[in-house]
Image (cartoon, rainbow, N blue to C red; front, top):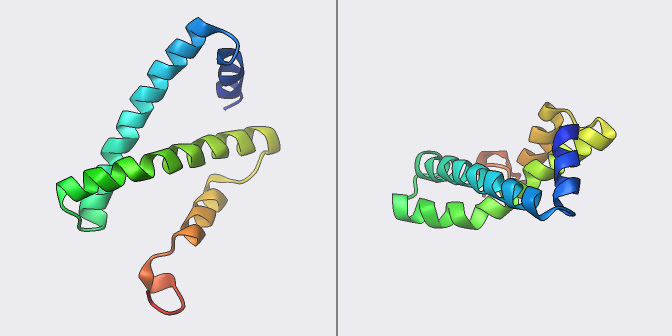
Length: 102
């Protein structure tokens, strides 16, 4: 993860590296979008069209959460992947996990 931070920092100052990291980011984004579409379709029961729309809306937040995890775990050594997952789940509990069931 430290290498990723070094690359991000260097890309801020070097155009060629910024272009390459942009291409990698686009590939990661497409993979995450595919995952989100499947999750919204199978996990949430949305139609493929609705799932694609929701996936595009959620993508920036998902990528930001991943980047935040990389930064925190590299610089601070915390949280663990398990603690990070629990924190994300606390932000968006399922209806069964909320006090009022909604």
